[in-house]
Length: 68
View 1 (cartoon, rainbow, N blue to C red):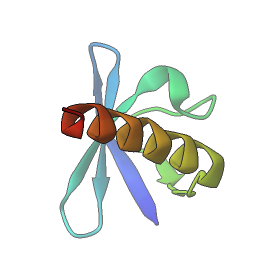
View 2: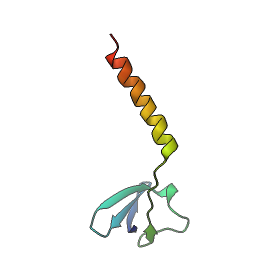
View 3: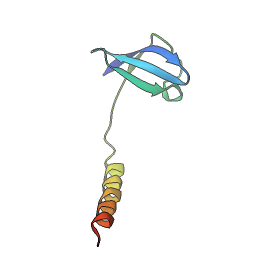
View 4: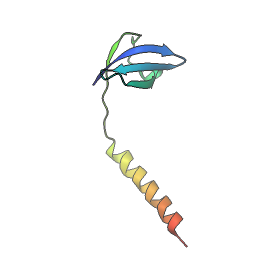
């Protein structure tokens, strides 16, 4: 997925996608040399280990809430 950095303000970049949607992104996470008008490639990757850990935290909380 690609987006265009529409504007940069107060530590964030507003990246506009093809459908007109916008993503707010911290500028310190942008590739070096990025500026308004830059086209950026956006990739989302599933972190299976972190997902498993998070589900375990949720399961423990639910068990505590259900406990008498």
